[in-house]
Length: 444
Image (cartoon, rainbow, N blue to C red):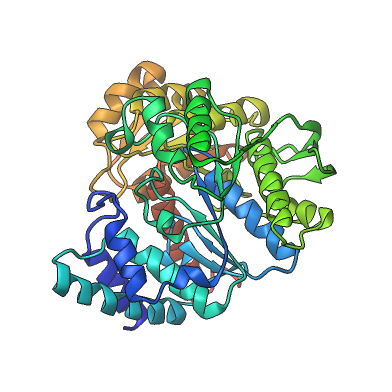
């Protein structure tokens, strides 16, 4: 398959979430048919509700700074599916993606003929990543769990090192209605003989994790997220000192914005030290360099301009509270919120956290079958927004036109509520930039 054909095939399998089938049987059969690519390298798996993507990005930067050839697998993507797979820090080339996808498709179709069960979009994309990692001869794979943990396709890779980032309520329709149930799904990535790193957790989640560790006869490393903050830039990048039982990491200027990144950095440090104990040559200097160079698009991603742009997923209440805290501490200019979200999210809590800060709020609907309807968003947002500052935009493109029109040059446009919305807006901006270059209105 060519790249475009590979993408078309994967999309034909159904929407990533709506067509999802939790369970490991299909992906395990698929990996077996591909000659178990995950057995060619050690792996780290991260699960949790918030922070797993940022922590994975930090760990990837740390291990690359240490000279370790890495494969990073994250989801979802914003603009191109190739964003999900990074080889030694670089997005996989479309031709390489297509080559791995061709192999996976052939194996998946053979399984379908044999069993009547076709591996899903996420199962096949996970297999594509693992095949690409084997082909690239990575020395370490870093895998962000897609949903939950117990039945997520990434769990079939049997990572030797696992981490649990902060757990909160999200995806209750799939994982359970209580924090205890959700924590049990995520803690199931812990197995016998794994090294386990655990971020600070609510008491209910911590109890579940401890019980799982006792069941598997492993001793977890609980992270102390208390870092000494020394300074902060005006846009929210912190300088802090982290201390562990093994070392001190002084004057670290975190590349990722927001105070919540202190916890993610502490987990990444603990993972790096754990990998060092497993034989990886990771120095203090590499850890500091990685934390200072990590990149994670769509999470407090700032773009300067007049007005400036900020992208942040904030797709659950915990994420929304983190974004609100960032606004309260670091943003002192008029904010225009461009907000769209999925209908299965806790919209009341997300909107209650974010809408009050907006000098202007524009509600829109991403091109996604799960997107919340505009009338639903308006009904929930109205009590939290001044009437004259609230408006609806049928499309993200229209929402951005309105945002630019109503935001003063010294203001900030924040696109938030869903990574799908962010991806759609960023693709729009890329097309506009390309058109300007073609007409000579923008210099390369």
